[in-house]
Image 1: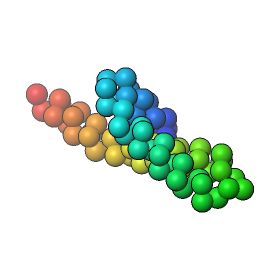
Image 2 (image 1 turned 90 degrees about the horizontal axis):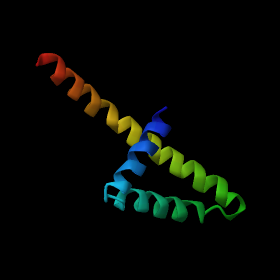
Image 3 (image 1 turned 180 degrees about the vertical axis):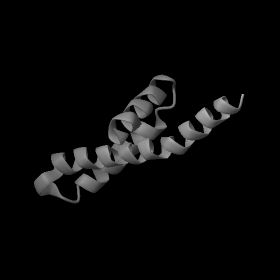
Length: 73
């Protein structure tokens, strides 16, 4: 779920005009996957999925703080 949530957020940011994050993730995945030419496509996909998951994980504290603030109001 972290991977999916992070991916949705990243794609949403791109449609809002903040595409730099997705472009950086694609660039980093390409650099990392080029180090393993035998499994380049798999490593590229896994790297993007892992980075999307990290972004999804980073969203949790943000959502938690917003919901906590809403409960206080």
